[in-house]
Image (cartoon, rainbow, N blue to C red):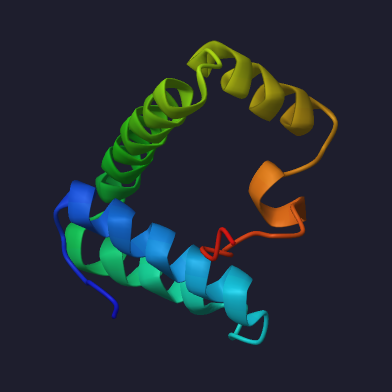
Length: 105
């Protein structure tokens, strides 16, 4: 299910769903994410991308906090891992072998 909305919080969740579907299928058209973002800009103007980036960061931090509570590892350590991967030119999401895998068995 894809959600399309002009509200940044819902748009951020929809974008995350698109990325998850892309990672899981590995066969979706590569321009699907760009088309979604372009559509948002056409309907709302370029400032929607700023709002979307802020909302994605907030959602990401909330997820890291939940992960930290579940594992007992500080959220700052997960952020350190993400920053280190980025500094090395990697994407923890894109380069991970199990991206989009929700089966934890």
